[in-house]
Length: 210
Ligand SMILES: *Cc1c(COP(=O)(O)O)cnc(C)c1O
Image 1: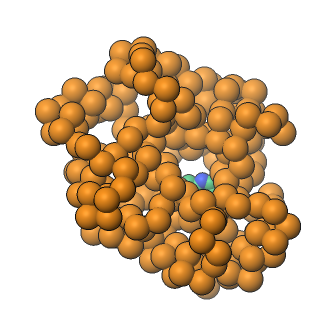
Image 2: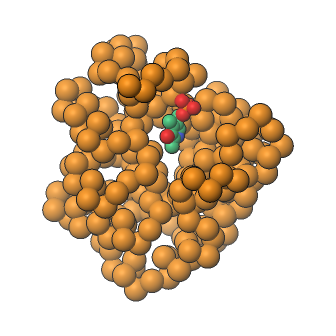
């Protein structure tokens, strides 16, 4: 894997022992998709772990992760961003966030379309937020064996990133991340310009939901 790509090891559903083992082997960056699960694990694990929130986040759950979260990948509304800003202020922090785009064929996946993202960025309310920092974009490709479809979706996300960078963040060095690529598609994502991949089952094996 190229050294400019950051690996978020996705440990959702796995117990803290699994994380501790990977931590002791030297990995410090972990991803979770449920706020309470992340909070519980964070309290039990070393302080120098970087916690990335990758799942759909409800506004009323932001409080669980605001004290420590490193990057929220899944911002998909102004309302959520306002809540993150509010909770970040309470803890005297600036929380880094990515805008999640809907790039997949599946309707069930979350995320903004391009116009919605522009509306958010142009809103007066967004421009008043002092405790969030937008650092880029995130997306999930369709779950499929069709690698050409996956590649097209990742190309689309990269294009959104470049257009938004140019229009809204031209002189902002923080706006530089493209979070795309999971176990079944991260090699394509890296070819298409991913800077952060989120990989679970390819590292820890299949998840068992109980
Ligand atoms: C679970 C999850 C991943 C990791 O999925 P794997 O297929 O296990 O690699 C990545 N991103 C998000 C948003 C997830 O929910």
